[in-house]
Image 1 (cartoon, rainbow, N blue to C red):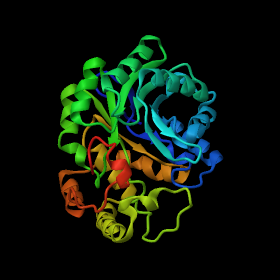
Image 2: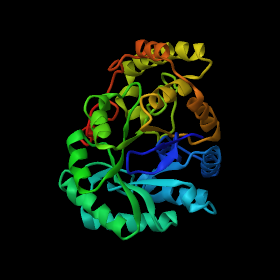
Image 3: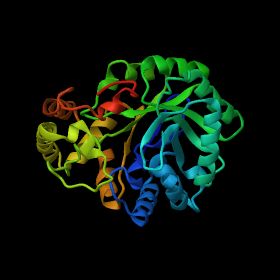
Length: 331
């Protein structure tokens, strides 16, 4: 697998990364054995960047990765961990904690649950409105100096916050949603990343399955799957959005590719400083995603994709209203 470097100060990683959130209940029931097998298959394919969050399944995801990564050379993979999101026993969300003392506390737990002596990229999951970003990043910097962390990352922040954080310590990458139907980063955030030499790890490249080519209107989901609560999957919105997918399907067929491969390749084609994260939780979905890296999109292909899904054409916010206020950029 080809590699891409996360910004001017970050690590070199495989050109495709693995997002592990879906392995811990976010999309309903998952199978631990299949999840572990999928991580193994990803690493064996050349994927090196593995992304998690300490709040995914309230620690379940980190314990799952500990098992999946057992026996692997620690230098053969790059662990990206988000922290700070507060949750309750019932799984509800309770805000964000970016205080320096909380940073140290969260890190201590993650190191133990993951069974490692360092995190490669450590990032607040969202901006804590009560704590200046300089204090949060400064605390991560202290952990870098102490040898527990290698790089600072950020997630879902705007251009101004990027500049303030980068002034405290070089930021390796910003993790933010970026796909054919989520392009708000293109206005201010992406130019700022390139100006400052910060990489981008793009999550939601398949819009949580909406533009994967596998989603159907009225699809029955498990009780734990949060997607039916997302505006883009609701009512008339999903019917409109799936019509966009059908337009993409025709473009994909002309390229001899699946819809999922086409939309992953589109994100990768937006710049060598971007690493798409695929949230595959089965080997079948991973196997489908991997050939996207070999799919070359010409200028004509990109124009056809743009015609099929113009910027801003999707309907519905990418998160429920209660979560939108915590994002640095919109849709």
